Amino acid sequence: MLSRLTGDTTLIQTVVGSFDLDGVCSLFQFIGGMRSALAVTSLYLFSLNLGLMALLILPILAIGRKVRKLSRESQDRIADTSALAGEILNAMPTVQALRRSPQEARRFAELD
Image (cartoon, rainbow, N blue to C red; front, side, top):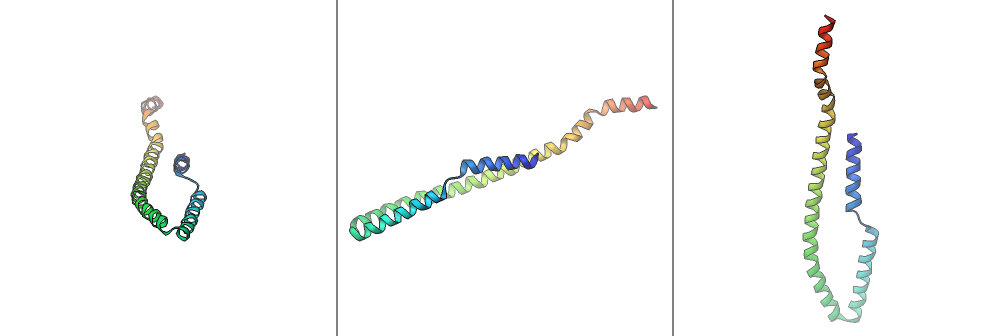
């Protein structure tokens, strides 16, 4: 049951946090090709484009660091949840045994 819980949680995290890497790769290749064509036709527009891309890289790096931090926190939460679920599932027989303790004591006393 614990393995199933951990697997389902990881699957949900993967589905929510995933995106199509092939599409992103194709987009970057398209942008690179357009920039190469722009460099051949107009050096001024190419340099302007290059400057704007440099301004866009800074927020992307900041967001990447935040995503990494959130991913680490998410994995820590999954580990904590799995540990808690394991403790609960492993403690169930003990709790059930303690719950039946008075009935078992009476039954044992009746056997004497």
